[in-house]
Length: 376
Image 1 (cartoon, helix red, strand yellow):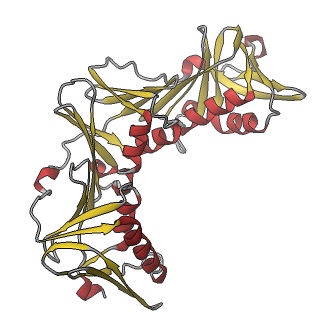
Image 2 (cartoon, helix red, strand yellow; image 1 turned 30 degrees about the vertical axis):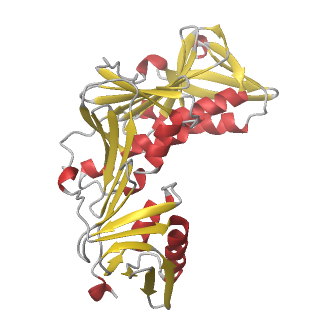
Image 3 (cartoon, helix red, strand yellow; image 1 turned 180 degrees about the vertical axis):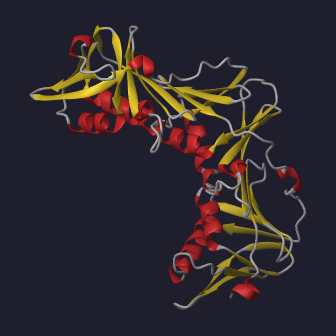
């Protein structure tokens, strides 16, 4: 095999597929990136058996073939090459052992001679018989992930909580995440009619996809799925991921339209105030922010070993006064990803969750309160 391509194309391609290289594995071949030049297109692939990524890069194929190269060393070499044309060449005659193929990487006067593995040993991406698909813009998908991913759980004790529900129903994609303390929901209308479906996509997959997406509004992502896999296709890149098995939580039972207190408030003011309050909270300290809702004012107080703070913000209120406590981080996470200038908060009592949502419910954030009497 012999190919040439620009350093910038190679760096971009390697950066994309590296996200599917496992940090630990008992299969050394999975620590590699596959360079496949057996057709008229140069393809780079990485696969950790849960998440696989293939991307195409432009370049010239002089001799067809394929090689698997250790991802870590390949990535470092490519990144530090001069900004010029790169040549990658393997030769069966240079095979040192049954398992190793010599690979020569050349750019200007730099020349690396490293061992590769035969490409046919590599674990290819599974061929997915696509059952159905939806299309949304890259911008929308990137935004939806940003606005929900923070409330997945990082604990493996409940696998479903480490993923996000993609609930396709009535031509609307509803994306849901929860961690036991809060729920994040975003709704996106779909352009074409598709059958209803529920999928639980691993959070890791969505985080990595978000890093790769260009985020352009005019660029489209095609999302197709089967019982066990989901496939994202965009910008000459294919991402294949296993789905998380199991029935997702019935969140509709947790959502309520009832409220005793409704507050309309400037989002930036509220976010800034809570942010200031957290200056007095040490890392890992679970001090709540106590919110006292009156007729035209919301008073926010926090007290810790470092000191105390209180601040008042003007609000528009309907319903009852209320004294309630929250983990400030959960409020900050939700407010940061809302783009509206003002937010509406719905509350029932000091022990019931609050809801931050817009009128169309295109976003809904549920946050459980904390018992501040024992925590203060």
